[in-house]
Length: 143
Image (cartoon, rainbow, N blue to C red; front, top):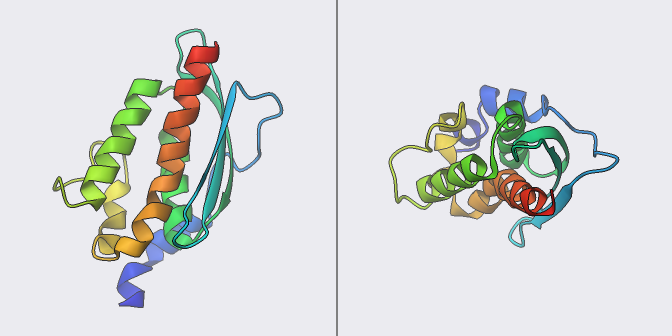
């Protein structure tokens, strides 16, 4: 069970998280925690004049699945709007809940399929996507 859940690609992603430095002057910061496992993600964002993510910083203290999810989020968040980030969050949430057959169109999320039967891990997987979607929405309002 453990080998299938924590495969080589997930472990590699967990060690290659982009944008790991917090931003000095973010437009918005959001912290999300999983009460189940204690994982924590803080996401800072700056948005451009169109409300798209122009800069991203994050602090990730999570299991390998949460770290891998944060890596996938950060690889593709720049240039995305709050609406796109909310859609990615919602698709991932529905996928983990068994409400859809795929995780949506966010690149790479299918690597997390081995975690589907492990419901206790889902909160950690969602953290980075929840945080970035909330931060982008807050930054758009503040801008």
